[in-house]
Length: 343
Image 1 (tube, rainbow, N blue to C red):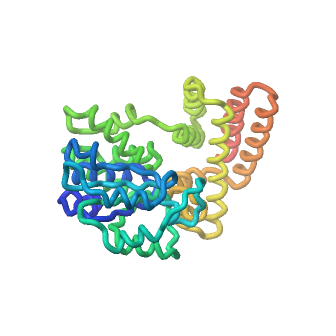
Image 2 (cartoon, rainbow, N blue to C red; image 1 turned 180 degrees about the vertical axis):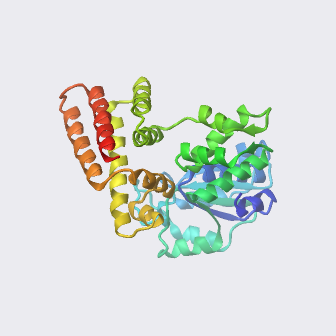
Image 3 (spheres, rainbow, N blue to C red; image 1 turned 120 degrees about the vertical axis):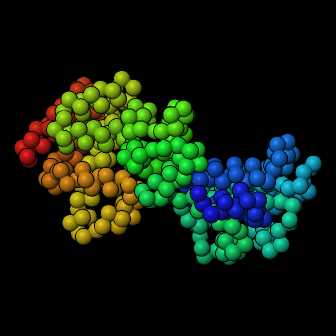
């Protein structure tokens, strides 16, 4: 749990909050915590405003914050998409009177809580307003957690609900959700409901109940190929086709994974650590960790050959040459043949 969440739950509420980041789980949980701990039941209807700064000027938001509560003690104003705090250009031509916000931040009212929600990786720290807001507000970072941090999030939620789950099962949950906090917590909620009576989530529960994304299925498909399990790889491929996934979309994801393996192999040869590679490639560190293991099972030549063949199949699919489903099937057989020659 974030320290700022503990403060909110203890009713130690700040006059201004700033949420920065793209992790939906942290953003949504913070919003709900503020609503639950600032407003009482019917107050939400009268004293809660959820506003979009891409559609209205900041002075209108300040006016909302300065309005007295109606049949309640506090008002809560959410100000979403403060693009003027970033280096990005707004898609809409909304003019903002920044001076009005600066004046408010220097002397916020005590009967309102103003919360800015910036769904971006970072703000423009050069701007005077950004500096003032970060100095005035309680900042909550909604950033992607590392693998260890994600484990702590899961363990905290389990403890909160008096549930048991082995480290093996937790690790598998993280793998199947590609290290994504929001996805992992959504799947964990489902697992806790299913295992409510036993109070224990097993590895079998994780394997049978956690929904695999298309990307995760592609990763597992390659894992099957590495393990020389062509039948297992084809079973995953056929399941994807039954789920009405388009062969060209499956091809694009397989190509993306092979490009990542090739890039990682080249970066590792240059002495990059996994963390450095993740930063350079702008890929989640957990995905890099898993992909690095896969990359070790292919030579540089094999990866280049696979990428060349995938590009050929992509062209053939887009020009309507041959059976799309069969082309990917044959690619898996070709990959299997190349893997056997390597061993």
